[in-house]
Each structure stands twice: as structure tokens, then as C-alpha cells.
Length: 413
Ligand SMILES: [Fe+2]
Ligand SMILES: [Fe+2]
Image (cartoon, rainbow, N blue to C red):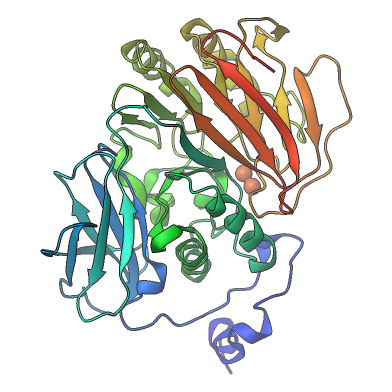
């Protein structure tokens, strides 16, 4: 008698490949074999200075640790290729491996090309600029999943903005830290769809959510094996909290909403981290479970803990925009200080659904802090200039859900 896994192997992707499942977390495992090198999963991220480094990663399948693979890179306008070799480490499974190349000493604001030995495809990437002299765009969201019917339109819309990077904060593949094949489908979709002009790969900056973790909440790093195998570079502490600093013009502060670290254990770190960056032009804080939810109840314990532990720090530090997710809907809060509208308050935008179907929003409640809410899939386009943050939310059809501009002082429109 066949095991469940063997049975599904026989069925292969055609059996399940394009069906929409109401709850993707319960979706049957779809085993799609990787090519020998696994380059269809190749994507970029940052573990260090986005002005001068780039991390290239892909996943391959093998029973034994793969041999190093040569990769060649150059500035777009130069003719000499520089050779560098990959390293590898386990990808949360005994038969899958992360292949990694870390490029360093790059030039800020520069287009590069690279190719993998003996492979025809030439990829491009761009380093972050030294200064914010031109508008800089990034895409923001969470709760993506692996259903091509819903993910591809949003990926294509986000890629068409030519963002420098995509910030995805939790519930990436919905593998629950268990299903490697769901992980592979997720990275294949990102790799194929999140490309700008000239075959430029758009890097992913990732935060953690419950569906990265075996059990979702109050677990260890070891129980989110795929996430940490790919993204451990930003997270030096006990959980998935860390910062990515773009010179002195942009800092992204990622927090772990009780998936692999307690909310309370990050409070002092958050206070010190924001204080250290008081002079940075734009500081964004992002985490998965919302303080001001649009779908779930206002008094869910994690939301309560975040409002108690982190929100006062965000308010004191003068943070303008916070990215929240997890609820699978669109929302924008009022500008809030201590739950009340204030001209100098913090705006919370979200709420996930960059590929996962939108949920019905909770009934309107005048005291829940929200200004706008809608049961709609969404990705945010964030455009920074030296003085302003322009935020545009769009649905999967490219229709505008919201558009507002925040100056360092106030919301302009
Ligand atoms: Fe989710
Ligand atoms: Fe979630």
C-alpha cells in the first residue's frame, strides 16, 4: 500500500496545481520535482548593508551536501566577470539545501549582472542608492501563499512598480514550517514573477508570521526551519526581530509577533533601536499580527500585548507608518496616540492578503482606531522622497484602494 506521500507523488501537480483551496494551510502537498540545480527558486535578499551587499540564494534537492557552484558577476557596464562560489546548508529537510552567494564591497546605486556557471540566463540586480536623491519605491504586504491564480496578478502588479525590493512580513508560503514543497512553490513564484525590467530580480526582505512556524506561536527558532535557513542574517537575537538600514535615509525595523519570541522580550530592544535611529529620514516598523486588526477581534491577546508593549514606544519615537498583516484585508488606521486620533499620531496600514483571499472585515466599531477597511486583497506601493512618504494600496486588478502622503510632520492628503 502506498503512503500518502507516495500517492501524491504519483498524482503530481496536475491533480492540484491550479485549484483554489479555501484554507491553503490545509492544502494537500504537491510534489513538483526541482531541476538539477534548482535555479527556478533563485531569489535575492539582504542580510547586511543594502547599499554594498547582495545575498543570492536558491534551493536544490540532493541527498548529500551539494558541491560549490561558480557564479560570475559584474557591473552592468563592465566587461570583466568576477567569479565567486556558493556555499550551502540544510533547508529544514534532509534532502533540500540552501545554496548561497554573498556579494560584498559593491557600489551603491548600481546595476549589476550575474550568471551561474554553464547556464545561459543573465540576471540583473540593483544596489540601494547612497542617498535618497531620487524617489525610492518598495512594495509592502504579507500573507501570500502559493496559489498562482491569486498570487501572480499581485506579483505582476508589484513588479510593474519597479520597486527596489519587496517587504513581506509573515505568512509567506503557508508551509507551517513543515511542507518543503509548498516552500519551493512559493520561491518559484517569487523568482519567476518578481522581476523588473532587464531581468532584474527584486529582492525580498522578509519578516516572520505564524505560518512560518510549526505551531504558529510561542515556538523556537528551530520550529521555523525554512524561514531561518533563508533569512537568519537579519535576526541575531532570540527571535525574528532585527533591522535593515539603508544609509541614513531608511530603516526597516522587523518584529516577531510572538511566533518565535515573546512580544515583551523585544520591547527594550525596540526602544533602543528606534532611539539609535532618531536621525534617520524614514523609519518603518513592521510585524505580522496587527495591533489594530481589521478582521479579528480587537482584544486578541497578541494585539493587546503589542498595544501595551510596542505602541507607546512607536508613539514616543515619532514613527509615522507601521505595517501590519495577518488579517487578510485592507485597512488604514486613523493617526493614533493612545488609541485616540491625533495630528501627530501613528498610522497603521495593512492588513495582509498579497495572494491570500481577503476575509470579511469585522463590523465597524468607532473605537477600534480604523479609518478605512475593506475585504480586499492588497499590496502597498511605498514611495519615499527626502520629505514625504507616498502610500498607495492596490488590489489584484490594479484598482486603487487608498492613496495618501505623509510628510515628516503630517498627512498631506
Ligand atoms: Fe495569513
Ligand atoms: Fe498570519
